[in-house]
Image (cartoon, rainbow over all chains, first blue to last red; front, side):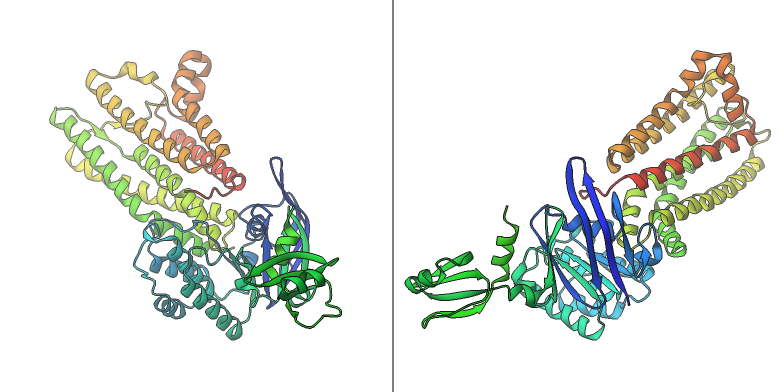
Length: 281
Length: 234
C-alpha cells in the first residue's frame, strides 16, 4: 500500500527550528488538510518531501523508497505551490507540454479543457499572468498530472470566489474519478473543512493534532441562543471563542454538550475557532 | 534516473541562446580576421575560446531557472548534474567540429594561417613577442573575453545564493589574477603555465587543461546545486 512517511524529521534554519522530530504518515487515497499559522513549518515540511531542501535529521519515504535524490520516488509526487518555479519567459501552453515530458500520465486534453473552464489564456507567458492566473495554471497542471501524491501549498492564492468554488468541485471530481493522496496546506480553513478527511495541525514545528476531521469537530460544539441564556449555559465551560449577531450569541465550547436548556441550539464546532484556540501562543 | 527527459529539456531550453551566442562569436571572429587580412597580415582567429566561454555563459546563466523547473518536475539534482555535463560534452564536440570546418574554409582563402591561441588574458607572458598590431588585436580579444567573464560573473552573482556567490567570486578572482600570480613568481610558476598549455601553445595540454577547467566548473556547480536552498524571489 502506497504512502508517504516522515520519520523523525528535524530541520533548523540558523537559530530557527522549523521542524522538530516530525513523524507522520500520509496514507493512500486520502485527502489531508495541513494547517498551521505563518512560519509553523508547513512549507518546510512540503519542501523536504519534494526535495527542495533536505532534512537535518530523519528521512522521507515515498512508497518505501527514500525521497532524497531519488527520481523514481519524486516522480510520484507533484507539488503545486505559490512559488515561482517555472521559467518566467515560458508560455503556459509550453509548460503543459513540458509537464507531459516529465510526467507520462499528464492528461493534456483534460488540462486544455480545464483551461477553458477557468477561462485561462494559455498563450500568455508566466511573467504576464496575475497572481490568480498563476495559481490557476499550476492547479490545472496538478489536476491533470495524475501522480499518486498531490501536494497543494496555498492552492487558492489570489483566486476569486467563483474560481475557488470551481477548483474545489474539480478537485473532488478528480478524486472520485482517479483517487490519489492529496495534502492541502491552506489558511482558508473553512473552505477545505468539507473536503479534507484528516487534519494535521502544526505549531512551531511540532505536530499538535493529527485526527480525522470528524473526530476533531466532535471534540467540541457550538451553542447559540440569547445573551442571557448562553452566558448562563457557558459558565464554567471550556470556551474557545464567541460571536455576536444582533440579539443572538454563539459560543464555541470544548467537550460534550450536557443538559442543554430550551432556547439554546447546539451545532457542530467551527473548525477555524478550534484552530485559533489550538494554535494561539 | 530520468536522464532522457532532463537532457531533452536542457538542450531545448538552451538551444536558442547557444545559436545566437555562437553566431555572435563567429561574426566577431570574422571581423577581426578580415581586418587583419585587409591590412596585409596573414592572420586567422580561432573561435574555440569564444565557444568555451559561450557554453559557460549559456549554461551557467540558465542554471538557476533550469534547476527550479526541474525540481518542480520531480528531477533530482544528481540527474540534473549528469544531464548538464552530458549536454556540455555534446555541445563541445559540435563546436570542435564546426571549428575544424571553419579552419578548413579559412585555409582555402588564406595561406600559412597563423593559429593564434587567445589565452592571453590568463597569461600575458607571450605578449612580449607580439607586434603592435597583433598585440592590439589580442587586447581586443582579451577585452571581449573579459566582458564575457564579467557578464557571466554578474549573472551568477544575481542568480545564486550567498554560498554560490562566494564560490564564483573566488573562481573569478583566481582567473583574473592568474597572469599576475604567474608573473609575480616568474620562473617558479611558469611550469604551471607550461603544464596547462597556456604559455607554450601546446594544443593537447591546452585541451587537457580546458577539460580540467570544465570538470572543476561542473564540480563547483554540483556542490552549489546541492548546497543552495531555493530562493523564492527570482
